[in-house]
Image (tube, rainbow, N blue to C red; front, side):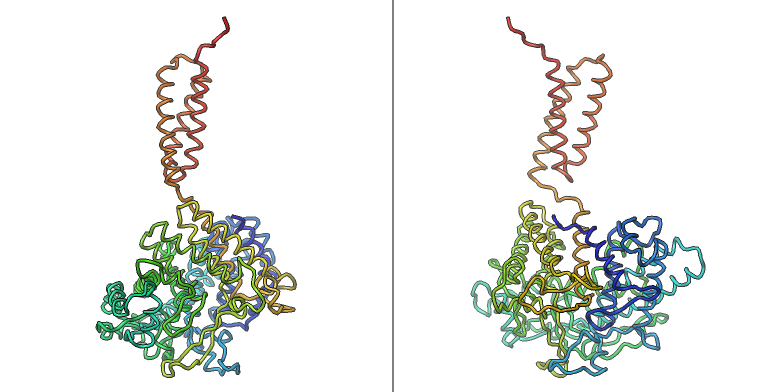
Length: 617
């Protein structure tokens, strides 16, 4: 793989330190006006690698790598960097809290008006799932960072600052989890409604009668239906139970764009206060973009790091259980729909079309991410994973990343300005109230490709995905800002697509840069993971080890017991190598093959040395 995450992340950190900090002040904002999401994205460009990739850790000054300190030298030394982060993170938590302490999750400058007009403060102040989700990711990282850094603090005032940050982060985490529970939506509709017709048309890849498709789809979703009806008890979504009982109904589930209309407040234990739980206004129907964003965030709540460090308190653990239930049901639902039938998958019929009649390759990418995660949960075969990999390859070509665009190519709109989502109110269905733009197709495609490559054991399929990842990274690398204070950060799409208008003085897009950082973190995990063992190499290694064992036993039987020390040392080394080959045979079969071949060569030399020389008579 050509992508080298350590070097690239260090370059990003160096550029980020230059553009974000002028002592003693941290500089917020970038291409977008500062808001709760953009500022969190900026912070996560530092915190994600620092908390997820061991070689980038900043919470133990004695263990901080020299090249990391050099990249962030503008922020201080190994001791000053985490102290600065404590101050900056505390400032963020306070900035996005109301006077009464209620955490703020407004979309603000990330919202736009459908008619291009200026939004009023009420519209800008509406909560959005993207802010709930990124707050979960950020606060879990912050709490973990503080827990470790506190162990090396000795000064009482620094420990007090760390305790205050953890308190603020924990409150924001709880509030964000409550917001996600109140933003979950189950949309129930009849099979002959517009929604039902579109869903059946999407999943019917074999031209079967609609009645048969409806029956088979309901049967495939029966368990998910039952769990939504019986197990979802708190937050939004629970009220749909009676409608789900109707055998003539279909449904879809996921996250709306904000707290849904009439979502009940979440009852918390008496001493837990997250402030005001505001009334929802969002449409009670899932949006694929916000569903995927929420799923990615929820996954951090039950990650290995979160469990090992015990980052969640009692209340958060209960909320996490409810969110994990929705996480499982949502991924299972979309994976079932996307892989429905015995022939071609609906996912493979590009582009994906939603129940409200919108189709786009970007939507196919969103669905493929949910399919990948669900296939991992079900321990699916390489053949199924490779089919998703083929979809990612097709999407890269259709998005004009691995193929050149033509004049006026509409595919370029997915890169700039991006995929446009119309956000609707529950009280005004069919009418756009706000607009949200998603312009992360390229980095999201790379991250899914890297994650999928880590799961596939088949060498051919894995190699194809790694080749695709290299092409995607080359595309992303070409989009870096080349000049100015934001040089080395993202995004300038006109450098990859000259057909697009260039920004003469672009500022950093933390939205895009954070997603590139996510890709590099995924690449670091891929490189750091154990190689996927090949069954063919495993069998070959076993055969070679059996032969080497047998020949070694012959050597021990036929060799002289009073041989010199050099020969005895050689036999001992061979024995050690054989044991090593046995140890790594299942996890690193290629290594075992190499070791076994070296042993066989050494045994053959010993055997040849005992044979009498044949002279000429």
